[in-house]
Amino acid sequence: MGELGPMARVQMGDTTMQRCAMTWTLSVLLIASAATAFGATVDEKGQNWTITTDQYTIVWNVDAQGGYSSIIPVGNDDTDMFGAGGRNLYHSANYAGWKDWGATADADIIEEDGGKIVMSFVQEDGASKNYHVTATYWDGVPYWKHELTVEAVADVTSFSDGHEPMVEPRNGFGLDNEYEKWDAPFAHAAFANDSGYFAIYTEEGTARTHAWQDDGRMDLEHNNLGVALNADDFSDPITYYMATAVGDLDDAHDLAEIVTKEPAEVLAVSAKGKLTTSWGDLRAR
Image (cartoon, rainbow, N blue to C red):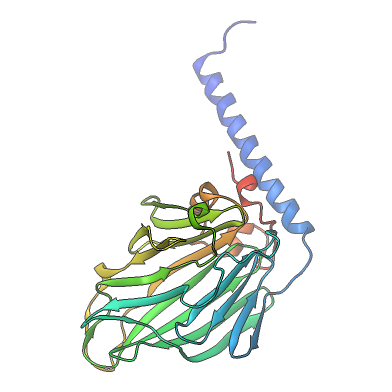
């Protein structure tokens, strides 16, 4: 048999790529269709808020420092990625000294419909800023979204020298917590250990990792979006994403390709479609 011409080789290559893409798409659809209906839930216990989806269980702690105090991805034997609760995820700004947001001043369920939950949290730093967080959680994907605005209690810069947000796991894994940050396709950072990964993503700011105490920490910066606010003004929102799943740093990085998309786009079925948490095995190769 003679050698194939250039055009034939290109066509065969295109066909192979199309088959690979089709195989991956069909795998996703089959898994999504086979999954049982779940329905994300939110529950208030002891003034803390527990959000449960088919991908993770997370707890929003209302005491200072408010924010997530527990992150447990499905399939990791109920090991908490954050560990000992407390100051695990929070916002902080350095104006006239460092000021972390404190306890949760207000929390409301905005939407609870099938596979989607929208929560509203208000955090006060006791000085010139109130932080308003709208958090959206979905079934079917291992990520969720925060939209955050700053309300000026007094004249202040919305986003300046600070952590927007800071992530401080206290899980006791020490050096087994591996950290990495990336600039493409946009800024994101993650830590991972044998129990899975937790990652933060922003299209608008920068990401950093830090050697800090035993377990390390990481944060996002949005200083470039800072504007001067007068008392009672609200900033434009910043948007960032978080994710947790069984997997490693490579899986956290790969998720950046889809983390900003609505679940319906990713699942290619419906907003209530489901996937397994084995995202690393499902991604196109």
